[in-house]
Amino acid sequence: MSHLLTLLLISFIVSSVGWFYFIYFFSIGYGLSISALAVAVVAMFWGEMTLPAAILCGVLFVYGIRLALYLFIRERKSASYKKILYQPENTARKPAFVMTMIWISCALLYVGQISPVTFYLNNLAEGMAVSDVWVWIGAVLATMGVVIEMVADAQKSAAKKINAHRFVDTGLYRIVRCPNYFGEVLMWTGSFVICFGACCSVWQWIVAALGYVGIVYVMFSGARRLELRQAETYGSMPEFQAYTKRTPLILPFVPIYSVARHTWLKG
Image 1 (tube, rainbow, N blue to C red):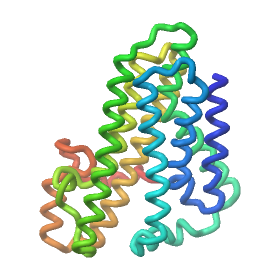
Image 2 (spheres, rainbow, N blue to C red; image 1 turned 180 degrees about the horizontal axis):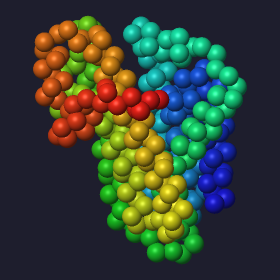
Image 3 (cartoon, one colour; image 1 turned 90 degrees about the horizontal axis):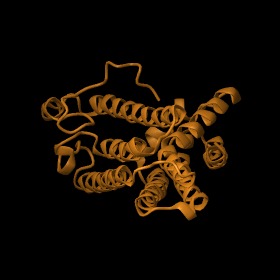
Image 4 (cartoon, rainbow, N blue to C red; image 1 turned 180 degrees about the vertical axis):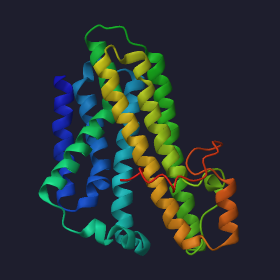
């Protein structure tokens, strides 16, 4: 428990960047928090560190730093992203209570997301029965997820340079409309599966499950926002209508083509 409290303190400190600009709680602050937490886990459990756990922490560190830098650069170079970022709902001054609740929620979520590898190393240090097999599986899935995100971002950037006013339906986008969100879901699924060989108590399962369900909810909410935004921009184009009818929204080969009507997907 003391390790989780330490991680929570780190998460609070790093994610506090959101107090400078509200949206940073979920964007730059998110990436920096995950990177900081990955480093903290390695530092706290250096003596118990195993190769698959080190790989997973390394993947999470790279993911977080890359995300923070990508969003920072995009904010300064992309006019379309600036337009979304500086919408009234994002720039309006939030009450201190609301900001505090968001800050707390984000800090808790980020710790919950990284908790499986923390539980694995903590239980290993305490001599409990844990399995490296699930950590290896998790590390492989997480690595695949980050690679998918990087490729998706590169493909979208390349496509937009060719035609900035057309939706992207090439590369990974031919298979799924939100491949970067899929990559993130896959990465955190990799983190969560560690629980099958690491969690030794009900409360550990609860913490890890809340972190996993929370980030999956955030990804589907993000996919819904993107779906609504694209429908507004490209909805009148017959080829876009055909694309959305044949291409799953966020999970490849899973016939979920729209979540627009699910208004409970907020965030």
